[in-house]
Image (cartoon, rainbow, N blue to C red; front, side):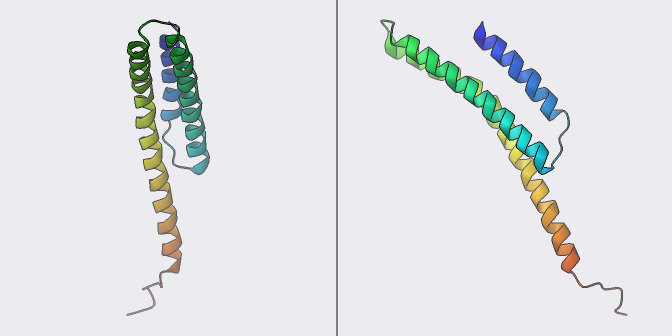
Length: 111
């Protein structure tokens, strides 16, 4: 129940962030912070699950299931991280091109 609520909340939050794929540094920073918060929530839930596993008889099976659940929850965040990294690379490339464009001698004065 808690996992599904967390997944729905994460999906809604990330949908609002990804609706406007802006490459400016502030947007990238906000997206990274959102991903980090989601990752921290997943990590906290994993810690609770693994702690609860130690109270059960089949500890290893429970821990394996908790790790699997954690990996499944972290995979969309990894994909979002890749998107943010691509946006940041694109922004850096644009900034570099702008800087280099200013350093180019103009060819208009040459015949």
